Length: 158
Image (cartoon, rainbow, N blue to C red; front, side, top):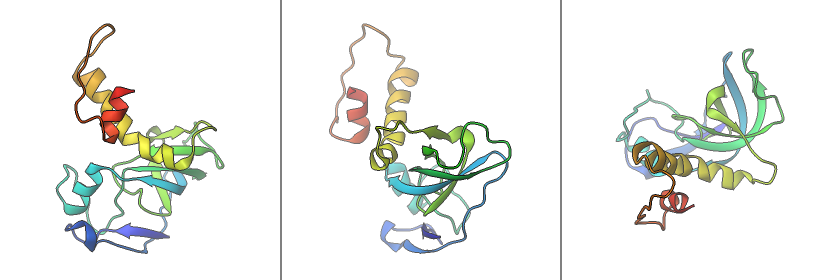
């Protein structure tokens, strides 16, 4: 498959698109034919080796992807080949194919396109964690959101 491959951490521009072995799903994993990817701040940190997780090189970076399931492991029960899905992984999304643990894969509504799905996972998850879990915001409370011009800020406003 074609993928962005990190051979060593460094400036974003040093990483290239190249051939990389196809991933193979394990018993609890889903194989996805990637149609769109999301690009977020944590991805830029990962490429440079500045993120909290540092996979062994070489690896395929990328957290968010949307596509179609092409195979499932023997223990997978929620998905089947042909399902439209989005996934958030620690790394691996910037390739033509992605293997994801089943618990990190989410069904896509028929009305949602691949690009929108791939672009919303990290931003909406980050907004939810900030408001609901960290901020413990409840009904009737008012929140000031600054910087609502980016993905996470816009998701918080929604």
